[in-house]
Length: 114
Length: 115
Image (tube, rainbow over the protein chains, first blue to last red):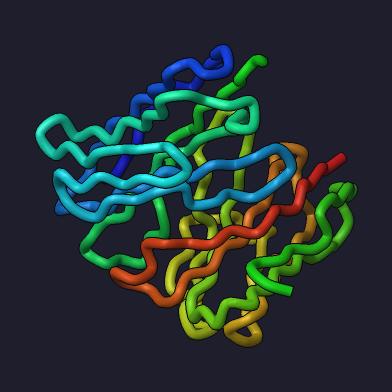
């Protein structure tokens, strides 16, 4: 079956630091990969996605590259801000098109200190 | 109003109560989902509806009963819940099932506490 593993945190960084949140997955077929972000008191928002190997998703300074050989989709940002404090979820959807919704990791709580 | 809305945002109920959660999407989507978000656990998919027809039930206890009267509205009826059902319940929608369903839009959630 499908599964997603990500570092749980909390991850605490200073403003302007470099961010990496690791995500690896197990899936049959050729999944699409996503990063969602959840700010306090809100629902999940799609941050970025990649639908095939070697694709790079990017948004708001965040990037992640779909690495099929290492089954990974690590999230990176060169210089984080206090406003990036949130919980980040890595997720996959099997490209077989099933009605399974998304398979999520447990989420990584990111805290950025001024 | 745009996006996906959920009401109420917070709900406290006793184990013998009956309550309902409501979700409404203003995106013209055909598929809607209920997820449960508990502390320290991945989001759990509970129900999937496509064109108002339930297509998946991931072995959710019968004390949770979904209803989808049309493609814009989704309800989750609750009765005789247990304290371990306390969680954030998230609704989501997507344009369709299948490849285009990958991108899901989430509501803010209902924080449920069962006492």
